[in-house]
Picture 1 (cartoon, rainbow, N blue to C red):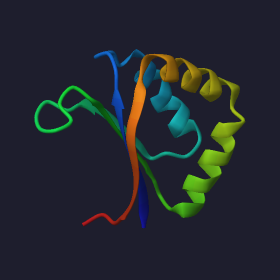
Picture 2 (picture 1 turned 135 degrees about the vertical axis):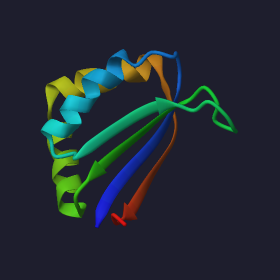
Picture 3 (picture 1 turned 90 degrees about the horizontal axis):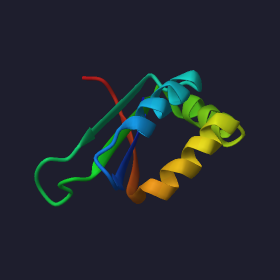
Length: 96
């Protein structure tokens, strides 16, 4: 079963850091990274990020590796200055 991590971020309409984060997540095992801005509803204007991993083992390995990756740590520090994390959910799903 796939593990999908969905995060909502409040901040500027700028995907520069997100474009740098995608390859880092994939380097550590993510199979897809999708990013976009919500254009209607309660979360209008917020950035939505969905990152998929093949299974729990891949997700766990990726999180452990990223916590010691200096490139990821630098990117996370910069993102925390410019954006505010609003919510994060983890879904277990399967391809239909």
